[in-house]
Length: 103
Image (cartoon, rainbow, N blue to C red):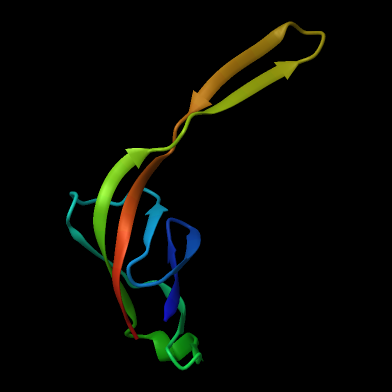
């Protein structure tokens, strides 16, 4: 059984027991989170549920950790103009462990 959820403008394919990293979510470590933006669910008999069949569908998860990703270096320059600029970026994330999928 798996579900396709949307959070933070991105889509994730999740299964019970799986750990994923999503954009930062409010809440403390160990807090329960419920995703209600479900795009599709595949049940045990390989049926794909879409649209109105997912009105009450939920995915329950638990916040496992908060963190920051690796640094990405951004280098800008304009040739012949002596313009160079180097900056870095680290994206915040929340590690979430999926508990169950409720169709």
